[in-house]
Length: 305
Image 1 (tube, rainbow, N blue to C red):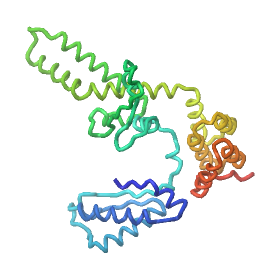
Image 2 (cartoon, rainbow, N blue to C red; image 1 turned 180 degrees about the horizontal axis):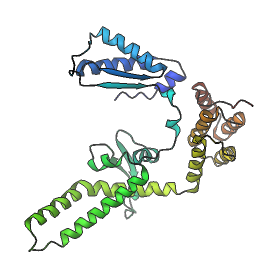
Image 3 (cartoon, rainbow, N blue to C red; image 1 turned 60 degrees about the horizontal axis):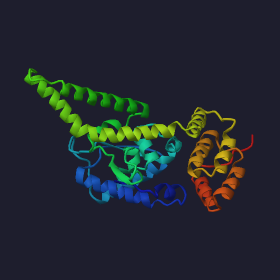
Image 4 (tube, one colour; image 1 turned 135 degrees about the vertical axis):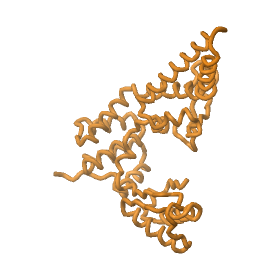
């Protein structure tokens, strides 16, 4: 993994480019093993800087153009995050994205309370259970990138298939054909050993996420977000900020919506007032958070027309 959690802060707030040097060295090491990447596609200023650093690393390490068909990596896309800062702050709609937003994916695992997975476990309902969410789990690999409504339909279909296979297995008689026996047993065996466990877990997780989405505050938030992304400025948006801050709800969720407004509407109306209110309600240390977001170009006061 080439993840660097401090890259955004270094590049857009502190104007430090050490992370690009480290990334260029890492890609050069990959090329030493698998051969030079044939095509590199760039978007953004920092992507161009990275490509220049990579070219120097390739030259220093003697990495040459491979013969046709010799390189294992055909292409590489280098995308500067500031090309599109809006997308990371939008709500998730895929199943995996909602798992991450609801439970937090850490090293391909999530920690979930036992009571969410099995409502019958009243005694240990607050005990945390670790669930793997990676492509190694075949059932999850089919589910992870689906939009949440489609994922729900998929889970219902698989549950019906499992119940149908169970009924077919019960109806097997001594007079059944060998081929029929084999087909039913193979289908039932696959579902029981490969799908039943993950399917049961993900049905419970999907049910929990569905409940969180039915809360009126969630629907209100999504409505404001959709209007902003469509280019409109909702009339009650700033009253919504005040209401949510007054309840001392999650400041980061409020900031996500403010950032979308700032990027789409060229600034936030009454920004100074909102910032003062946030400092009074959440603590003056949040002023530094606002300052960092301003330096990164994510928050600004809307100029008066």
